Amino acid sequence: MVAGQWINGEARTAETSESMDVINPANGSAIAEVDLAGAADVDAAVTAATAAFEEWSRVPPVTRAEALFALAEKMKEREAEYARVESEQSGKPIRLSTEFDVPGSIDNAAYFAGISRHLPGSAAAEWDGEHTSTVRREPIGVVGSIAPWNYPLQMAMWKMLPAIAAGNTIVLKPSELTPLTTLMLAEDATAAGLPDGVFNVVTGTGPVAGEALMSHPNVAMVSFTGSTRVGHRVAELATAGLKRLHLELGGKAPFLVFDDADIEAAAQGAVAGSLINTGQDCTAATRAYVHSSRYDEFVERTAAIMASVVLGDTASPDTDLGPLISKDQQTKVAGMVERAIAAGGKPVTGGSIPGGSLASGCYYEPTLITGLDQTSEIVQEEVFGPVLAALPFETDDEGLRLANDTRYGLAASAWTTNVTRAERASREMQAGCVWINDHIPIVSEMPHGGYKQSGFGKDMSTYSFEEYTQIKHVSTDITGVARKEWHRTIFRNPDA
Ligand code: NAD
Image (cartoon, rainbow, N blue to C red; front, side, top):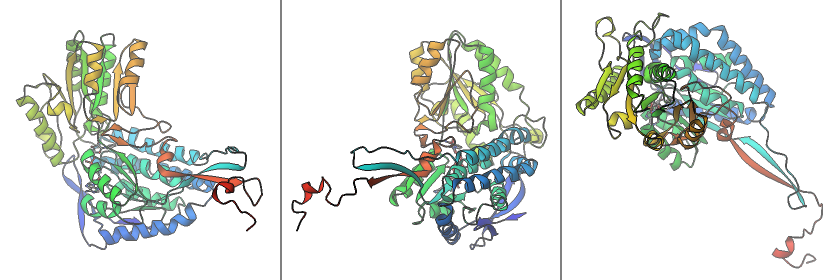
């Protein structure tokens, strides 16, 4: 399978004549060859999006809603294919792509279809008695978006849906490692009746296609999901062009277990929350802080559940945990664990690259590691692998302080049966999402986005429209008089 870009409603070969293989990280096999876009391809896509904006920004909301509902229906027709391709290109177990990624994406499309008809500005009043003010909420223009590889389809949807629902047009660059479901999405969007040029996809690398898109003069807004490191570069490019900027960046979610917590629930939640998507989830639980009186119990139970997790063939519904995205990622995770062990960390379970039938893939054992210091690299930096660190704490103040003590602030959870503690944690944890007695679940209706170095701006929910619209104040004179009261301040002789 050779896949190109999707520009102006059709597949288009890149002008660069360059391509790269998409690799299934479960076994190292090439599953597709994808064109790598250059600046000319990005320019063609932005030109198509610019041309489409004029009409799309003016169609009635119901027209946008119909196209997005039709998209949700089109995606349902090949749900199983989406799940298979998503699993093959990213190494997700088929159970995860079938039960989480694809239905979540379709639900997102249906949600934004509905909510696109409820995008009001506010009808206001005669604040000064002489004008009626109204507030219009208007689209921004062409949005240039960049998505990561960890949830390729969902991240593409989170970017394109609110942008399009609000009347913008978009050029999206998926990760070069996982472009296939985004291309399927573009094909379905056109088949669903989205006008040509409204949703365009360029496939290519970050430094070439990504930078060309972020700095294109006709891109009015930049919307990026990826690492904090690349986020800095994207911010530089967007700032240079004075573009609107939305950043969804890395995370290092704390998992705070108070002494009154249900330890069985916390252990189950810690395994699910840290191993989802092989830990390659920006909101994954990565640092468990557990009250010292319950620490041993938590560590023992969490390690026992983790050790029972089944690694294997991602096409099998019996597999729990798939590989990491690439050999590079596997080397990075292994290196961070090795350095943690060298610094005194103890893997209670895991801590190695599995061999045997898994050796050709990019697998890593589910790992629970103790004995670490708050300042250690693995506690402070994003691992993006199936690795959970556990650290004890003594007082609520200390637990909350440690939970907040990283540069990230995307998500956090607190585990307690005490309502006062739950309320205090939800107020004091510095993160865009705080779960109480759970970790991970998200819904289309609620916002997702970071605090601190995890970025700014929200995906999903009505809040995402604040990213993808601009507000206009319209002030209409209601006096009908030629000589307004306030003119006196500017010139005194109206009869000249
Ligand atoms: P990444 O930052 O390496 O790459 C993300 C995207 O940026 C890719 O499409 C890549 O091609 C592109 N890119 C790379 N260099 C670029 C450049 N110089 N200019 C423009 N674009 C460039 O991230 P990744 O490894 O693909 O994804 C994992 C990261 O994404 C993690 O840090 C994770 O926490 C984060 N993430 C955040 C959220 C969120 O909602 N906050 C969601 C998912 C993933």
